Length: 304
Ligand SMILES: NC(=O)c1ccc[n+]([C@@H]2O[C@H](COP(=O)([O-])OP(=O)(O)OC[C@H]3O[C@@H](n4cnc5c(N)ncnc54)[C@H](OP(=O)(O)O)[C@@H]3O)[C@@H](O)[C@H]2O)c1
Image: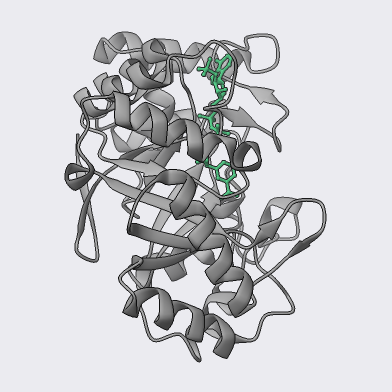
């Protein structure tokens, strides 16, 4: 498994997200072990997943597993109060982070991200919260999630710590981050930039994009791998390339993200050990330039 250098962290390119750890009848202990056996050393949490239940299940499963705290990176996210508000006040950031740490049963987080932008934020308050969390040893690295370049630059007017990662939705069927770059100066809908050039910004500023929901289409509408009715061309191409490399189509869907030179991490959310293994088994596949474009087009995208 390729490692991505994020500040001092030598992080696996594939991350296991724990948003679905509260699904019934899932062997979450085995999921962690299969992930670690496949080279995953990075786990993504958030205070809101399962209303805190997922972090608790993660902590209990971790304790029962053979994994050791010092060998892995544990990340969490705060800043959303579901259905009510986004909240980047100092008080909320600190309180929510401490709540997360308590449920995760950790005395430090390797990284903390601000989950979704709060338009009422005061950069100085965020800076003060980060300073306090860093000084007390509770958080080692900081980042953001679902933010555009202007929002990141606004935070940087006050925040001293480097913002090292940004979680964004990206997959073969959610490509808005790259579409506009192919359609510059054109008037079709694909030319519309939905994020202010975040892909190029991330590369220029050496921020790691953590691609979330790599198997889903739309905003939690369904899954594209194996969905031959809705994505016939894409599945045909995934099958063809998977057969060439002797891996699964799931693995190729992730290899497509990992092939991008932006050095992204991909956060998979499966708790199914077969699917985790399928992804880690394919993690060293490096698609050719042509294969990458063939998959992009098979997903229904157009190049001018
Ligand atoms: N920053 C953000 O705003 C944000 C938003 C969403 C997620 N995230 C992070 O990203 C992680 C991954 O998100 P995600 O869970 O949406 O990612 P995902 O890996 O795209 O989806 C995983 C879920 O889809 C199911 N699945 C995958 N392929 C399938 C198929 N072919 N057929 C049927 N079911 C299939 C999995 O079920 P099985 O378990 O049965 O395989 C699992 O429930 C989360 O855990 C979280 O850490 C961040």
